[in-house]
Length: 368
Image (cartoon, rainbow, N blue to C red; front, side, top):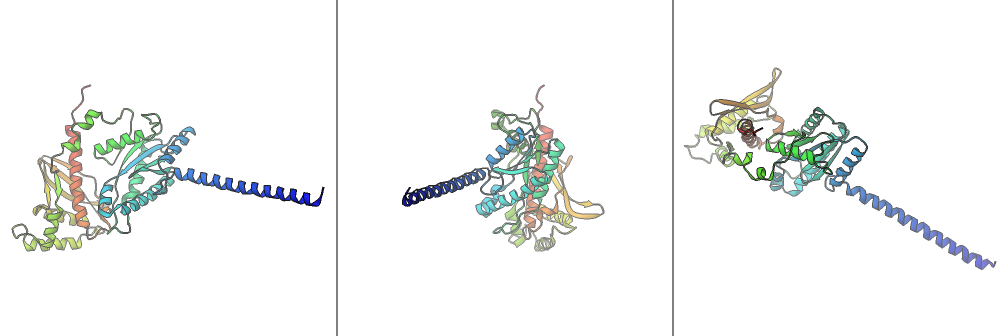
């Protein structure tokens, strides 16, 4: 065979080999690209944790492996207010910060954190198989979110609270809907103004008639039983009120109290009591019947005061209901807005306590 023919054949073979290599490289790159797209499809684009599809896939895989997880479904409280007050960019940053804290909790609990969408998050916990383990995980979530979150562009750290629906493994009221049980529990927690609720067999959403009928929040009188009048409060602080509303000496005492109102102080609870008394006296905090009085009682840890306080809500001069302890850490880093936040929290707590009291006292019993 002539040398030229051999050279031509060799050249053609080399070209085909190079072309095959190029095609192989393109295919490998394409496969990697597909894998990346597939992975990203399971992740939430904003927070980087698992997204809706990733959560569903993970739940399915765990169930197939014989380790169906306990589920925590949580919904941030007042998140819309953050968007409305500080803008959607701040809201997005807050969601990312919450996601990071939940991911840490999930890692500690040997589980997975994800975002269903909006301000709803899910934790899948294969090792939380009892009610107590679910409650412990919920407490870990609440503790992780207790410290206010600092966001660039916000005037101060933003407090975060949430409501949690808990569902034990194998709680599947609707086949193919792995988070329905936790969602039903979340509804019950919201409806009864609780921080969390655990799903139990037989627990359901309300019927359509019940949903469109009188609900607890619809039955609450308007205005609510406790109202913090922010505008009136700031007029008092600024002295922009008539003499018959507040004497200058009273305004001076109020401003002096605001200067020392510090969540880091062991006397924080006592100062809150004095602040509340002045605000009630001058109409910045108002109660509606059947609330007849609200008193603040500083709490103690051992012999040392921790700065927190309890609210005792007095109804009809006959019943006294205690609210859960309000911790000073809720207000750390909030000066000079501490007073506003404290008084708003007091008003909201009184309303929650009253709603809970009514729910237990006036809920009609269904015939057996």
